[in-house]
Image (cartoon, rainbow, N blue to C red):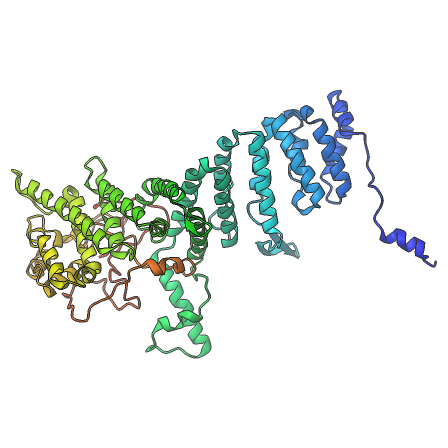
Length: 595
């Protein structure tokens, strides 16, 4: 049969209106009240039909709005069907009508508030696309939808509408955001999108910002300790070696770092790669919140600092051997010198407060020394002021021990904060002594002499015995070079009297020589994440070893050659298990101390 032009137009054009079975929504609800559910079940099936036309869906949504007061909890299955609709993929008219329905629903039936919030939050991550072949899933990846930015915008529009009609929404939002946080094994893109949207929520609901930051930082800490530094470095090294093998350029005499520019920007270690993405998102958020039209907004910066500092006290400070998350505060402090000084003062108060647990005081000392040593934006004047506080406290502590009836002895469990304070001083001087001596050598040397470091290293508490060997060795070399204090006799005597330490383990007691009795780690050691490091590099003081500084050989089994010359403490810092651990005490049997 020949197809005419009229019939072809009919076939090619969409129908003028869609087919609909059953009565109106109001009639269907009334019939269900009387016990007749046939049309009600038909309505649910038609609403959930993926082939439903936009015009029909708009008509239904308008009817639902008209009888929203009747949509009580008895109709939750119908409401859940509506909430599962893929409304974002529809026309703008459907989107607007859907948003109007959600607004009416939460204002008239608050029993559905949490369900509506969960619907919105479920769209904070890209959908997963699974490709099946022969009944087997051969692919499971993120949907690379070019409409993702639009979809995210719609999510936040709906959430703001809900807040407008139900001001108490923020009380119910945080538990849902926590519940819906993706598993940390999900892809970098999934985690990045979710964290981005969480932070975006804090822009229009500032009251939950501290809780949101706490949630995000807590998850990032799990990633951080789940990617030990040695594992991340090994993964990156393997990539370089594999590249060289494939290209036929492998040469043991070449500098491995020369191949770094040719490597991809992502991290080879999958957990570190996820953390890197989240660090980029969080630091971008910090910058955007603190700057308005390109200029630093002082009050907004102060408010964010207070929130981040609260999260630091609660989560970051007690977490042992996290390597990267703490750099969020490092980065924020670089915006304004007053913030850096406030952070140092905060750490100082924790260190010298007897009411604080010793383990947190020791952790604060580690942060204090590492921040002074590594923050290039902290001027020498501030470094001196901090050293003056530390050294004055150390001398008062020695005075107290000298005036005691009991003889002082080298006991970490009793004097842990004292030893970590001493190590913080030594570590800071290792990194900043050249800056102190520049310009006026005589004045700088007079200042170093005024610290009376000889009394510190020769006191009965013997801090050189428990400090990390690398720190002790470098401090001894520098102090000898400038004739500030001579440490080598003490170090040699300590080495002769170094006693083995008995530590409990799963296989029974083991006798080792503990080279890190303080369980020390320096939180601002070199940053390894390749995407986010671009924000840290300009602010970071790298280790520059002086050619005329001779170190005392340290006889430990941990030492070996190392490509990263900056990390002179390699092998001294304990690694952690792949869970968030709290800062252990000096004799915590679960700690993996170097031996």
